[in-house]
Length: 299
Image (cartoon, rainbow, N blue to C red; front, side, top):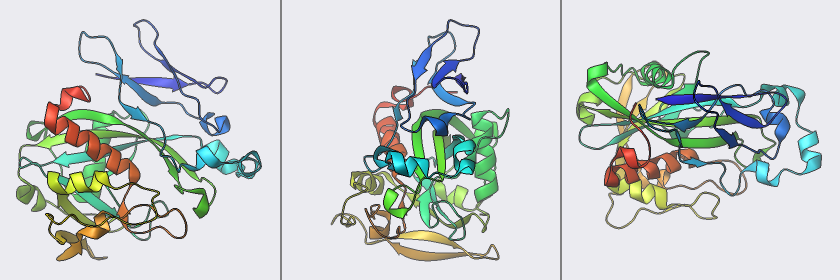
């Protein structure tokens, strides 16, 4: 069972909306104005007949622009950005029965994080449940539609995302709280691969990553000066599905080093796995080792 919290325009406190005793989580952004329009933020979760507990949550990476935004820079933020507030997003880590995870490369034409590898996901619509939103985004972006008997679901954690991710690339334009859901499929990645029909306006590539590659991915540090290199025990390339503009699918080989790229501290961004995705993959590895309930609760 997941609980939603409401953010009032007069306060930066996020309050539980439920008939049970009130629980409060203090969320103190450096730019309060950007939180003014928040209406729903997921903070606590619980199982049936158990007390709510806080989901694992990381607010910001060390290079997050909100940590380095000066007063004068904050005053330069346009009103349409301030009025937008914080959006709630859902991202799905689809795990196959043979323990591979699906990642998608965002289309180059997208305004936010183009060419960056992420799990399928998107915005939570009004009155939409998190799981429903995750399944919808998975279907819309990859063409994979899962029936209830084909998967189990778990919450992995929350991530605060800002775009652009660094001040060197401009002032913040988007602010999200992303909820990462793990969907454990009963099918292998090859069976799921046969069901792929990605939306080319949103997805330019798909890749299945295994635990050994994921361990290498999460060991890279975003904001560092140098990109990661594939460890000696890893293949030099990984098979990816390229999505053509007409929706046709082609198979190619991508250097593993691309997936180990880190977010450069200056200059243009590069093709890489997003920082929030690395965080979610790290939680996934932990869940693989100790069980999903150690990091989350089952829906």
